[in-house]
Image 1: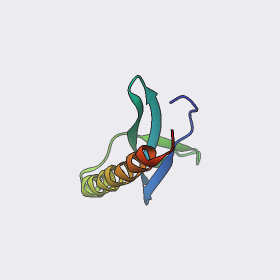
Image 2: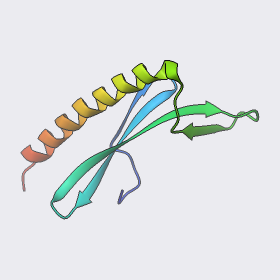
Image 3: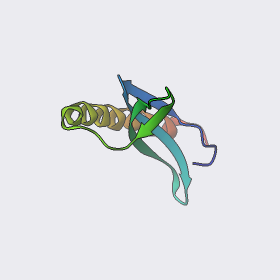
Image 4: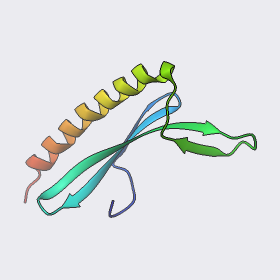
Length: 82
């Protein structure tokens, strides 16, 4: 993550899929971080990478959306003039 700035973040309530663009030896590639946002007793926001059973289908749907979005981003990269 060269610039430490996500390419895009997809949300479903407190769940998020953050898409990162990385530069590799064979060109750019994308990765995804799946997280859940929560607040502690003091009201501070935190990210967690664990999910409850009731969140699993939502996180799976969010992962599917991220997969589709990355396909679009790859296509845009392929069409970008050299």
